Amino acid sequence: MSGHLVIQTLNKSFGGIQAVQDCTFEVEAGSITALIGPNGAGKTTAFNLISGVLKADSGRVLFDGKEIHRLRPHQITHQGISRTFQISRNLEDMTVLENMVVQAPVRGWHDLFRHGIPPHERQRAMELLDFVGLARLANEETRNLSYGQKKLLDFAAALMAEPRLIMLDEPAGGVNPALLEEIISYIRKLNQQGITFLIVEHNMDLVMSISKKVVVMAYGQVLAEGDPERIQRNPAVLEAYLGEGQR
Ligand SMILES: Nc1ncnc2c1ncn2[C@@H]1O[C@H](COP(=O)(O)OP(=O)(O)OP(=O)(O)O)[C@@H](O)[C@H]1O
Ligand SMILES: [Mg+2]
Image (tube, protein in one colour):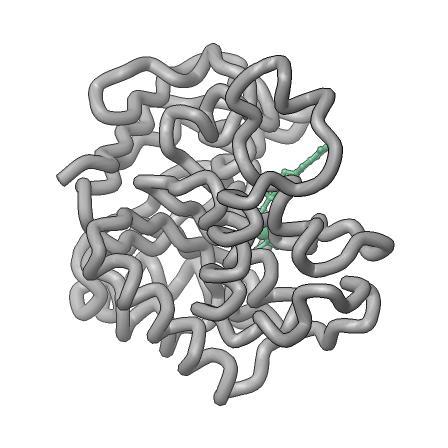
């Protein structure tokens, strides 16, 4: 089993705001780990540091024993880490299928100059769209999808690079209960195939039902970590949420 992620004393500040402070935790290979915390706790910033979208001021990130914190985002994807964004980054003018294919990893310079979609990528994209129930919308312009369908497209697109670890930033944000159940079942199925998950999420039903470990951030720091039952009973965690007003 691979997909072991180690985050060691990561720091990132924006001007005077210490968004992530000495952040340290591990994601066990093959696990589903949730990263929770009140709004502004630093969860998305931590994701941006791990995925290389932002450079840390200090600290290290290791993936399967290899340092990845100096790598660029596409190199980190190449190592086997995919992510989704809290705010969808789908290109609205492109079709659903095209949005899938642009997420496929660039494997060589010739990929940059090609025309059309290579058959193997089309096939993989169609399989993944089928997995999330969007295959019939493959040629639809992405702007015509519902909010929930766009969430599913984000999810499917993150699978194009054949990741060993997937980081999801609020996969259930704004989705209805039926779709939430669907998303949970996809995460479970992929996890059973060996894919490791790190999930930022405010929906406690999702967090508590699927995660093996919960890491709680507040004010940029890791406040607590442990199994879901223990985290739910942790007074410091409750206080962190109540202090900020629960969402
Ligand atoms: N690019 C940026 N420039 C300046 N400040 C930033 C930037 N990104 C994040 N911040 C600040 O860093 C802190 C952490 O933000 P972050 O988005 O990581 O929180 P979060 O835990 O993901 O919150 P939410 O649950 O609302 O998504 C906040 O105070 C935020 O305003
Ligand atoms: Mg966020």
